[in-house]
Amino acid sequence: MKSITRALALTGAGVLTLASCGTAPEEGGGGSGSDAGGASSDYKACMVSDSGGWDDKSFNESSHNGLKAAVENLGIDQAEAESTTDSDFAPNINNMVTQGCDLIVTVGFLLAPATGAAAEANADTDFAIVDSTAQDADGNPVELDNVKPLEFNTAEAAFLAGYLAAGMTETGKVATYGGMDLPTVTIFMDGYADGVAYHNESKGTDVEVLGWNKETQKGSIVGSFDDQSKGKAVSDEFYNAGADIIMPVAGPVGAGTLASAKEGEDRTVIWVDSDGFETNASDKDAQDVILTSVMKEMDTAVEDVITTSADGKFDATSYVGTLENGGVGLAPFHEFEDDVPEELSAELETLKQDIIDGTVTVESEASPKAA
Image (cartoon, rainbow, N blue to C red; front, side, top):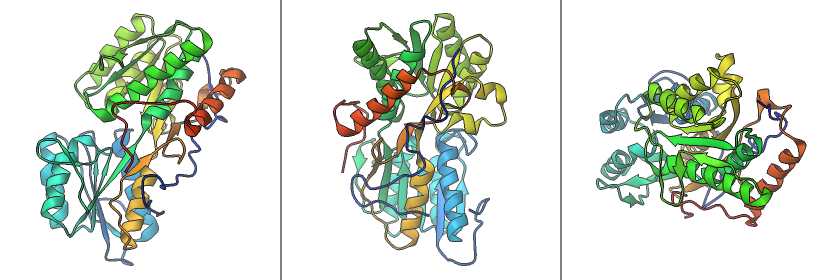
């Protein structure tokens, strides 16, 4: 189908400045295994995964990489708990508390109620949660002095991905679907749909988005972050309906989309959370169909909050990653580097800056609110 530019790193991904929405964490980082660490510090950083596990090639893995980097760079102790079901969340967090963790990082929106309960019951333990604020038992957001939210305005980067997809499609149809109906999922889908719409308005095209209607907030939600067969089935439907680019927002379920794309000609995938080309390094056929990725720099955010906390400077003010501070962005285009028209590449660069400057407004009901 096409190939897109490795040289076009729209993210500014090499440097992440956690300076938005309050005091930012600083920098920092590896040991491995549960309760492994160095002897140079009695500080212990800990992490609890969502049900996808550490090797989900998505948000758990990226966050876990931040923990490993902090442990390696700081020589601190660590402990970790890998969740396999939602019922593991509270016990795993409580296990980290009993192990004497100074900071517990929980990964994912679904852990918000368990994080809130544990933080309220353990005021002397610091917490950070990726992709959410803490919540009460009814799912209402709560602000706690010992919980730092690490959130990402991925609608901005997904807007670029939608514009890119609209500029690259050869069929006039692109698609997206979600794993579960959560704000951290639909924010991607909102941005993607708006990016396509912006391209249609700007260029006079009529590209159709299958799988999501931003106005009604209805679309294709497969109900799982684990069942790859569901990702395969819905992707088969999209490709058979004429879509040639699909953005799965479903963690490991996205592997089903890769499998579907590999079965046909001129099918590509836009990955999310991490650089899918890099996380699928063992699967050359998968790499060959990944157009780009909408990235959240979760690893850097996690490493930085651990470093700040270990330095005695924990700050519960919410961090929000944006295009401006490098917290979100598009990955390089790797195998597709030769096929994006120079004009489209230039438009993406301009559009990124327009979003940063506020000339182009990207809005989603699911966007994190500035502190």
